[in-house]
Image (cartoon, rainbow, N blue to C red):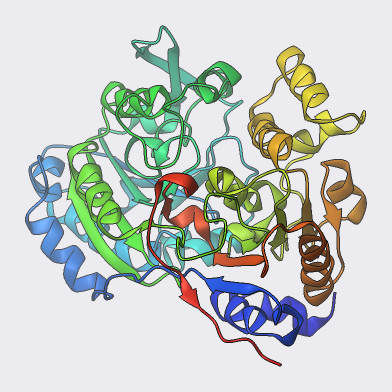
Length: 451
C-alpha cells in the first residue's frame, strides 16, 4: 500500500468518483450513488436553540437544580460526536443549575470496545479531557443492577453512572446494522452496560430477529431493549446530532432519551433512502461489481469496516464482486471476530462455531458469514490489517486500491450476463437506508466512460 493510496482512502467520496471514471471500467455501465444530503447547520447556534426548547423534557439547567453531581456519557472514536462543540454548552447548563465543574464526570461509552489512552481522550474531548473527570467504561468492572427488561434480561450498568444524581448522554444518530439507528438509548446499552448485559442484547438469537436491521425501530427487539434501558437507567437528558458523510453537522435535538432521538430518526429517514438504478439491462439481477467502503470514522478497524457489507446485503448476488476499501489504521479491532474463521471451512461451519462459543465481538463474525453465504466474492484493500487475517475471514486481500478494483472488475466482466456489466460505486452505504434491489426504482449518476 503506497502512502498515496493511504491518503486517498481518507476521502472515500472523492476517491470513488475518481475510480469510477477510470479507463479500466470503460466497458462497464458505471454508476456512482451519492445521496444528496441536507445543508449543514451552525452547530453551536442550533444546539443552543435545541437546548432552549428540549423535546419532551425540561431544560437541562432546570433538571440540574438541587442536584450535586452529574455524569455525561459520550461515544468513543468510532462515532464522530462533536464533543468539543457540545461539552461547553452542556457544562454551562449544568453550572447554571448549580452543579460544580469538579462534580461532573464524563464516561466514554466503550461498550465492549477497547479503552482510550490519555492522548485519545484529549483528541476526543479537547480541553475537557483535563478539566473534567474522564473515565473509560469497563464492562467487566463495577456495575450495578437497575432492573430487568421486558425480554427478561437483567440490566447492569456502570456504577459511576448510577451514582451520579443527573445523567446526560451525547450521541450521533445514523443507521445501524442491527439497532436500527445509533444514538438515544444505545449510549446506555451497550455503551455503559456490563458485559453480560451487552451479550444478551447482542446475542445470536437477537441478531437473527427479522426486525434487527438498518432503519428498523418498530419490531426491532434490540432497539426496543435499548430504549427500555434508557428508561431503567434513569437517563435524564440527551443531546444527539446528525452528521453528513464528511462529518459536518446537519441537525441536533435535545431532551427526552426516546422522544428527542425519534426527531432525528425522522430527519435521517427524510433524506437517507437510496434507490438502486432501474434503467439498466437485466435490472432484476444484482450488480456485477460493487465498490464500497465505510469512510471516516468507521475506517478505524476491520471490525467497524464490515458495516458497509451489512448495508449492501440485499443488493448482492452470488455472482456479484465486491471491493471493500478501508484504511483500518488501528488494525482488526477485534481478535474475537477473526477467531471463528481460523479453523477453516465456509460460512456454515463458522455459524456452527458461533452457536457453540459466542462472545460479543463475534456479532460481526456472524454478519461476515451471513454476507459471504450469498456473496462469496469480496476483495479487501485494508492496509492496516494483515493479509493473513483478511484471507482468514474469506476475503481476497489486495495491497493496493487500483489492484483491488482491477481484480474484481476483471472477474465481474468474465461472469456478467449483461452486454455491459453494471458497476456500482457507493461510499459509506451504512450511513443510508438502501431499498431492496428488486423492489426499488430510481437512477444513480451515470458516469462517462474514459477511453
